[in-house]
Image (cartoon, rainbow, N blue to C red; front, side, top):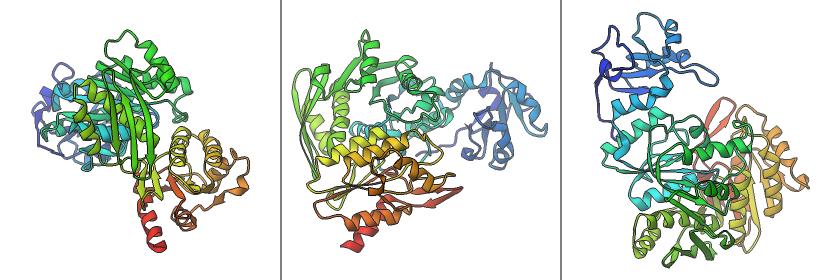
Length: 485
C-alpha cells in the first residue's frame, strides 16, 4: 500500500481540542495507538487498555520515533517533562476527529462491513474481488492476493483510518471490511458510514470476552444500530439474523437472504450440485432466477456467493455480469482450500458452528471416509472445546486431535477438554505435533477419502508458550503429500 509522507502541524491537528503548548510547529506524520505500529514522526496516542495503559509503553514509542504523546489530562504527570506530551479531554471519543484531520475524510469511499461469527473473511475476500476493491480483515489489508498482514480481524481505529487513506492514495475506492464483535464493542469503526452492512450468522465464540451469547449478539447488532448504512443484508437462515431483520423491518435498505424457503428471504438460494471440482446452484432474485457456477467448494461457499449476488444485484449489476464475476473468483486462502484434487482441505474453522458447517459441506463431497484433524487454541474460550469434540466425533469418520495454538496452556490439557465432549474419546487419535498429525491423516487416507485440516487456515505461525514458530498447514500438507506421491 502507498505510504505517502504527509505532514501536519501539531497545532493544526489539535486545534480546538488541546493546546499544543511549546510545540505548535512540531511536524506530525501519523498517529498510532500501538507502540509497535509507530513510524518515525508519528504521535503516540496513549490510552488505558483492559490490562495495561499505553503510557506503560512510552519508552518503546520514543525508541520507535514518536515525536509526541497524547493522553488524558489525568495521565499527563506520568510523562517526563523532556518529551512533548499533550492532554486531550475525552481522548478516546476524539479519535475519529483526529484521524479525519490527519488522514482525510473517508466518507467519499464505498465501504462495506461484514459481521458474524463465521464467513467474514470469505465474504470480504470474494466481494472485494467482485467489486474490484480491497479488504481489511483477518487476511490483511489490500487487494485480495496483495494484502499486508495487520494481526487483527479489525485493526484499531487509527489503523483503520490510516489504512483507508493509504488505499485511497493507491486509487482504491471500494473497501470491504470485517467487523468483529470486539471491534464493534470498542467502537473501532467510529465515524465511518457504509454502503452496505452484512450479517452472516451468530455462533459460539469469544465467550471468554463477552459475558454471554446475548451480549455477543448485542455487539454484532451494533453494526446495524450505531452506523449509517444504505443497505442491510441479513442471513435469515440464522435465528439471530431473523430477529435482527425483524428489528430492522422498517428500514428501506433491508435485504434478507438465505436458503430456507420457509423464512421467505428476499434473495433465496438452492444448491443443485457440489463436487470436489466446484458447485452449481440457483439464486432467486426478485425478478429472475440466476444460475451460478463456481470452482469454490461446498455448501458454505454457496451461502457466501448468495451474499455476493445479493450485494451486486442491489448495486444494479446485470445478471450476466454477476455470473461472469463469480466465475472469475479465486478461492479464499485457508477457507475450504482444496489440495490434491480435493482429497485434502484446509479450513480456518475454529468454532463449533464453523466446524459443523465445514464437515457437513465436505460430507457431501466424500465418497469414502471423512477425516478431521484439529485442536483448540489456548487462552481462549474453553467452553467450545467439548462442543467441538462432540461435533467432530459425530460428523467425521476418523478424528485426530492435535495442537492448534496452545499458547500458555498445556497441550494435553486442551485435548482432554476436547475429549470431554466425546462419547468414545478412546477412538480418536491424539498426536500433539501438528505436522505429524497432518502427515498421519494424509498417509492413512484412501483415494476416496477426504482429510479436513481445521483451525488455523491461512496462518503461518504456531503460538506455543511465548514463542511464535513458523508453521503452515498448507506446507505441512504439501510435505506429507510429496512423501505419499
